Length: 327
Image (cartoon, rainbow, N blue to C red):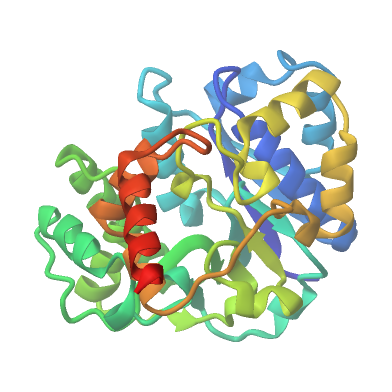
């Protein structure tokens, strides 16, 4: 396999990003034993290696190449992470496939070598932007950047990016970083809006990767059987005690990994078959139901719903059903 597999990590003991990256990189190594795994990190993160025991050593050993950038440690961790991500073309030599840490590699990624596109990614939420469930919200976010996204045809997920080592890509990443930092100053912290902005304003063409290369566990059911990479996307996980859709969405699962300093039985089973990471009680939705679950009405109901707790609304609906049955 010629294409490097690249991870970006900014982490400390206060988070579980290293544990996420460990699971992903371990799954990548198991399916791609001859691949060159590269880690791009900053000095503060590298200095913290060793503070989490044996797991840090095992994590470091997974990588053929570690690139350390000298970023200001006083910057927020998220900003440092995105500076590395939008600058990775300058930090890392050669063609690479960037992979977010909140992923599990399901099989060999060697097929990426056959893709000739200089720059490619999958559609966000596996949908054209015209029917994207977050279309309106995304357009509003892009407006904060001074960018009108109404004419965008494809809105890409930046969790998996194929990036060839070309002068055009180096120029593109510099522009993406400028736009990201400008947007960050305006309160836009995610990197996907500035990615869309840069693609549009720089006139750069992004090829569409097959959905199997970045299969989002919540939206990519159609692509699971042939998925290369499962993306469980912790940014979309609600807080609270309820069971998560995917095992690695649960912080406790990753903290248990840190505590054990080795693979737990739960994660070992997940690595053998990534589909075993799904919650045992899972239901699939499509069509209008997807848009319903994105509404404020649904979020309000979900916030106030507690299983087994008496609800006046549910009681009145039961009374209504009973009365209708009597007719």
